[in-house]
Length: 169
Image (cartoon, rainbow, N blue to C red):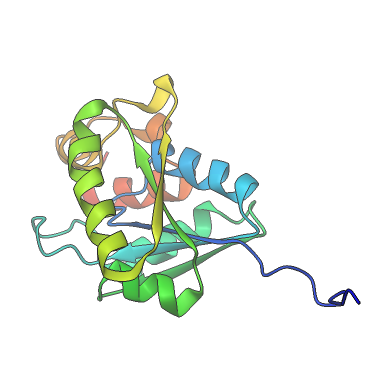
């Protein structure tokens, strides 16, 4: 006798962790692509102790993420200060999604993926950004904006507004 479950399959949940200081169009592209591949996507703004003092607080980054993904009904935002694998377990993620701009990103991301898999068994899916976003880096955007450069075409509108407020025209 075959039993048929009336309960559907578990939703496929992906976690996209990052510092997002600030969120840029390359990040948004990866989030949008993941939202088409998975039932639910959780984007987690993280405190990264290895990076310099952030331009935006964790709360500001979370708000900018929320404002920038309103068009994606299956994406939710979280902020955390713990290991990514712990966040993945908390949100029920079966995969971590990481964007790659260039081969140089791969080395560091591969080590993190292997560590995460060793710690928890969770897999990492690498999603390359499109060529039009491959040069974008939050560090560069912060630098250009701090000198009054216009990066509004490289970030979502809510982020452009906050950058202008924080860094001036």
